[in-house]
Length: 290
Ligand code: A3P
Image 1 (cartoon, rainbow, N blue to C red):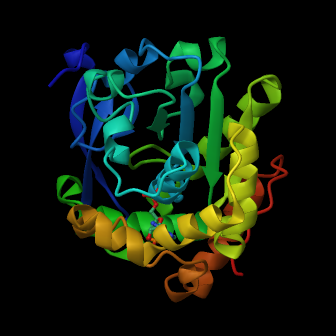
Image 2 (cartoon, rainbow, N blue to C red; image 1 turned 135 degrees about the vertical axis):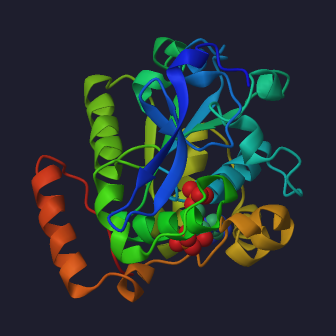
């Protein structure tokens, strides 16, 4: 392991409401997946950022793989089999050498809060793409991911998962804290170029959202090219290309509204109440169905 502050890093087994545990690493108070073999939370702060780097920032299961691939193709102007995997550019996943030699402009990814990202993200005011997804679908996706990913060693039931998830007890903490923290960052740093995308909007009209991405990146692509990117980034296409990661449930259903198959009426009422309490000041509007 490459962690600089080993003493502050330890494995934690957090119980759900039924006593089943989910394993992660506690790195200086931040819970990250145990497969991570990176520079540590403190190491990420000093990662060298180039002026033209693009940060892709998401809470887990919000469509990171999808938007990475779309952005990569729009940026390079080429529809290719992806030679640079998203995981390779994840700041907290591995040592800086993994992405240090990549050609500019790089797309760097992270699920961390701004205060844990490299200091130069704010200093250099690099472009940030923030992808958000409705929390009910995120929860379902995260549950399925957590029961599939070997390092989490989680065998718990859905009914016992939701409450600790939204209390922020599992890896990467609570969705609500993540979203409100990023909203605050956007508010207090109006000169930081941030493009906010919603997973549901991309599902609804991928061409429109890709035009927004192009404009943000300052690239011009024809409609014909955009429609080829659409074809190449369907969940079926991506599943076929990235077959090695499908076992971890990364390319599962890829829709909007699967939460209705999972949330009970009681869970839904509980969640809506919690949302009202925790997100009262948040102006974002999430779509739960299309
Ligand atoms: P579901 O589990 O709801 O299917 P992330 O990449 O941030 O880990 O997000 C994973 C979620 O995005 C999963 O949601 C996954 O199926 C979905 N996803 C991945 N690729 C996609 C694509 N090409 N189109 C739509 N959704 C996709």
